[in-house]
Length: 606
Image (cartoon, rainbow, N blue to C red):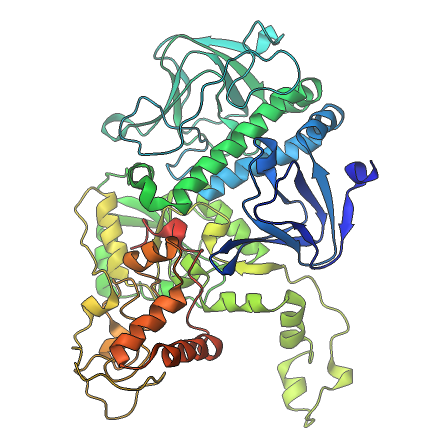
């Protein structure tokens, strides 16, 4: 069919498929863009905005389960549908299709947190490990496919596939296949035996995974020249297939079913990791093992990287006493406001402030991730998107026209003496300012190991994290901001609900008791309550508390939880509280929609 070759054109707001529908194909976006949403209760939550080159619906390649989300076009788009059979046929004729999908899946795994352990590759945990929690177990499949598509969890053995003898390599028990820090341009498929992945040396060495026949590892080397970030050791006598980067194209062309196996396995790994991120409480032991620190040094190398930001988060570190404490345990190797250095340096920990708004931000973030073992999101913008993310209410073209479209420069406009637009002083064209269509938190692009929200964040929390990195016992913050606030609640209540504090208010009484919309009781503690201590209501820059996040992941809504709490504390009816909260959200733009964007960060937030 023509659409199987060239794709199909969909107009803006077209429904591609709906949550709960059966599906048998994935889609590659050739042009335009789509919005992916999921219905929870009575509300639709936007999960992602995808553009040209992205794909969606890939779960249809490995199972026949109903669609888990709804997809609509956000502009006129051309989409290429691909089924399992058509992918095999296309792969044999045009390996670039498979290569595009495999590269994209590897990057998704890297960014989604499957490399949260600091390694570049991800597989299921060793089923013999008793402390790995409740990740879905991988079902055993007979390793016996000779023709056509391969079973999901198996690969043809040496007798079933005419492997090139030069690609087969054997290892004895204890042999290193590659070591952490090595350069590499090859991945490996396990034909027989067991391979263990570990990280660190000596006392810091950790065993992370054990992989068996049918699994593969080292795939990050297929798309990146970054050094290996883990060591692979043969646990038994092992026979592996070595696939070099330059050979992958020919392998896909001659044996597309092998590429389909790799693709489907990557999709399964991504699904398994997302189950941890979407339900962190159900997989607590897995998350703790994945995210526990492994740096036990007297001094660790730290880089401070700024993206699109007001620089307020890094400015809080420029205090003599704080820097003295920081220098005691760290060696700062990169920081634009402290040193003149053009390139981001190799570091143990990268602390990143700001959100991703420009293509330059993406490149800087990727470099920081590649050159660090741990990446810390520093500040509300980095963790949640912050106030700048409200620009997503508008299209980039609207923002550019509003900001730059009126005049060539500010003086020409304001000194012209005209109340309207000066036609002679307007731009006719705009150069590419490299704006991304959506501004977003950094975890939408790269793996984040730890998150310290706040506007600005409390530097003591950073010192606490560093103490944990070097093996010391860190301090613990209060559960909510109210626990750090010296104000005391009043039994009388305010009987009203206002946004701004009233003059002459009692400085020792809880702000909600005075009838103010203060978010301290639903907001994660750790900031020291500077706003409420100085008479201003908490506006929630630290994000929801752990208790609130549990309720959100259980299906409750953040806005409703906040409104109910205000109703009780301010002694007003719930209808009034809801209306005031909606006004707060609409006019103040400070009540963020945390319902789905923080789930993956709940265990790592400080």
